[in-house]
Amino acid sequence: MVQAYILIQTEVGKASTVAETIGQIPGVIQAEDVTGPYDVIVRAQADTVDELGRMVVARVQQVEGITRTLTCPVVHL
Image (cartoon, one colour):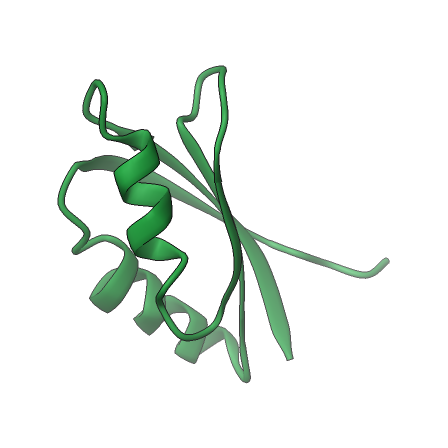
């Protein structure tokens, strides 16, 4: 199982709607709107890195109101 944090920037006033919509995507563990340089932080999981990448590109980045994403895979050192 691969997990990642997805940091999301949104259009002004869209953070809550984006977080709510992304929270419904299968594989998303948590989606919260936050303050700071990013507007929404998501924790997601998938069976493989490729599957995680497909989720981000095909599902998360397609949500209306998103302007930029940054995916940070969780590592266990």
